[in-house]
Image (cartoon, rainbow, N blue to C red):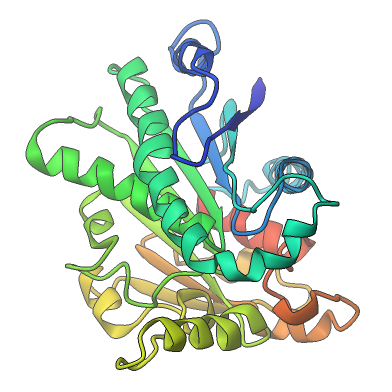
Length: 325
């Protein structure tokens, strides 16, 4: 059995509907649903409620479809097959206004830094609280396998939330139930390429039982060009840093994860078998450049292929990463 809900978050990173706390706690308790896999999704910058809902519906349905298709193959391709699941999509205000006809939308490009900080706030408060609530509602076996996916600034939401969880564990304020796992998928992450390194913004993630999938692409204009330009404008006297979704993780990040990493190239026709042998890697870096180059019909405007994540090869990649091959 599966269940999916969308949770509205306000501009302060707080859950707008307080009744959702009860809904989440009831859904994640062992009985009667017995969910073993939890999927948490966060969108990025400049995404209104309608677009967020459409994106979550499309991605979650197509990903679930591919997972079910793979699960039915003989021999079974998964080391850890997917179980009954509970999906949660976060919608946080990443635009000036939710009204698509508002003249204020012309100013959206100037909200980059505001929304960058807001993404961290949403993670620090909303997503962190959701994960803590779920862990509290399931203190005993069976443990939860968290599959947490972010796109663009949504990766900052994910990173900030799990940093809070890691800090709680380190301080003794939280004890993870035995067997708890975190699978993190960072799709075209709009954050620094060394943010996952020890001592940086999300370096504490490495102390959790976590595996991380990071996609990158040379065809992502938003990250390869505009992210760097924005960094140069914000820090006039510092060398601009690369985005994680442009160049992949830096050497300090790989060292933080004890160089336990694998690289895969995603070309047209890519399937889960390309991930064979990567299940022990704590970081998997997937280069989407080849498949993006082949998708010449895709028109992402000035962002290039930044949001080009809704197609079969990506679903195949995520399916294989989440459940091992």
